[in-house]
Every structure is written in C-alpha cells, then in structure tokens.
Image 1: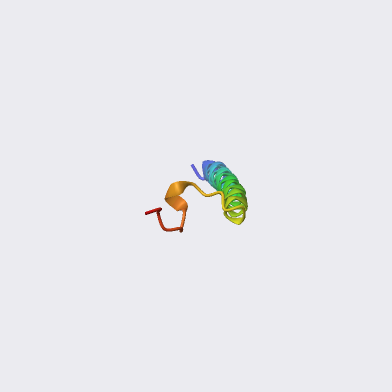
Image 2: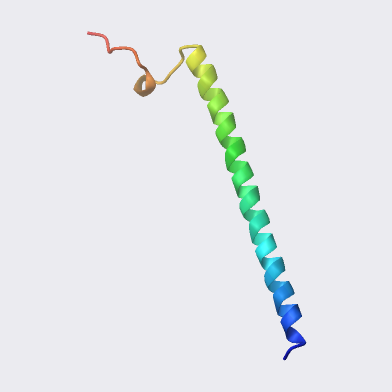
Length: 61
C-alpha cells in the first residue's frame, strides 16, 4: 500500500499542474481578446464612430 502513495501523489500533482496550465491559457486568451476589443473600441471612439446605443450625444429633437 505504501508503495502506491508516491505514484498517486505524483498523478494528483500532474493533474493539478495541467489544470493550472489550462486555466492560465484560458485567462491569457481572455485577456488578449479583451485588449483587442478595447483597442477597437478606442479607435471607434477616437473616430466618433460609435453605435447609436453607445453615443453620448443627445438624440435629435
């Protein structure tokens, strides 16, 4: 029984490490996508090319 403990612990450690790497990859992808969308939003704002629902201008009378 005692000889199986290191193998089990190693398997658990590898599983947890792979989980951490997967979460890190998903987080990096989300941050990258968010930065890209912010650049697009900033460019649209700088060109005053905003969708009607985002415009801060008063509606025409």
